Each structure stands twice: as C-alpha cells, then as structure tokens.
Image (cartoon, rainbow, N blue to C red; front, side, top):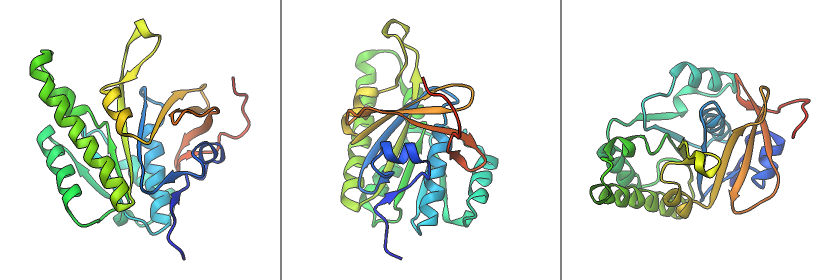
Amino acid sequence: MGRVNIISTHVSSVDELLNGGFKLGQLYFLYGEEKTGKTSLTLTVCASAIKEDLKPLFIDCSGRLHPERVLQILQSWSVDLSKLSIRIIQSFEEQEQLILNLYNSKKMFDVIILDDYTYQHRIELSGDVRQDLSIYKRLALQVAMLSELASRENITVIIIGQVHDMPEQGGGKAVAYRILSHWAKWVLKLRVGSRHYKEIIIEKPEKKGLGYFTINNRGISEPGNFRAG
C-alpha cells in the first residue's frame, strides 16, 4: 500500500471543503466554542491516520482529554490503541520543551495534534502588557517551529484553539488568534449548525462553502438528512 499524502475524515462535505482531507506537510489552526466537535474531529483524524499506517501524537495541553472518549473512537474504527501516542502537558515550559524536542529530533510522528494549545499560555499571562509580551513571543516561536516542522518533515500539525468572548465584535475569536492564524496554512472555524450537526468554515485560505458533520462513537460522521441554513 502506497503512503498517503492526505488523511481523510471520511465525511464527504468536510473532505471536499479541505480538498480531500488533512494534508501532510501543513499546519492547521482549528478553533471554535465548546461542544463544536474540535476534539472529536481531531481524534477522528488520528484514527483515520492509524488506518493508513501513519503515527499520530495527541498532545493534551490542558489535561482535559477523556480516556473513555479516546477508547470509544479508536475501538469504533477497529484500530490498535497502542498506535496513538498521548502526552499530557503540565506547564508552559514543558510544552515549550516538548515542541523544541520534536523540532530538533528525528521524525517520529506523521500527525501531531495540540489540543487547547493556549491553555498553559493563558495561565502564564498576568494582564500586564509589558510583562506578558515575552510570553506571547515564546508562544509565537513555538508556532513558528511547528510550522517549519510540518513542512520540513511532511507532518500534519493541527493546533486546537480556545475561543474567548468578544461581544463587541459580534462573536468569539480564539486566544492569540493573530499569532496562530499567521503561521497556519489553514484556519478552520467550527460552530454549531443545529442540535443535530456541526459546521466547518474555512477562514484561510479564503474559501466558500461549509462542511457538515455529526458527533458520535466514531468521532465525527456524515450528518445524514438535514436542512442547512
């Protein structure tokens, strides 16, 4: 079997929106409010990658990943649970060191997911602009290394961002949005379409259309019959 260059989600509208799926060699920034399917989507990517004999690493930056959910999805895909590496981050320094180690080491993974990527960064912030500038610079350096790592080693890197409310702007934007969207090749926003399905919008590169999916035991799946809009 030839080595794949694109990891399919096996959800037709999502894959179509992404020109086939998540590409190796590119950095994706994915964000959305709670319960929009961010983790389910990326665990689906991990399961699909394992099916293609690729090696995924899931980095839980906030310690909120549920082992039961991981088990449920991988078992639904009938893949070897030991093929998914999981790392739980305890501090901003540990996150920084792990990214540096991945950047400087021989390629070990084909897919790297960083869930709630700015969690440790947010803990470090004091609210003083001058004092926090160095924290933002360190975050930017981490993302720059991940971007180069993706391109250099032909790895799919997906950063999951957390939304904070900005009502004066008519909606929420992810923490450190400018930094993350600058380095990412793709910026994907997830939102709730209805009680029955979720939506994906591509903000970068600018592209019309939506992807639709539902959340279930397999992670994400086709939404079935529904009315969009």
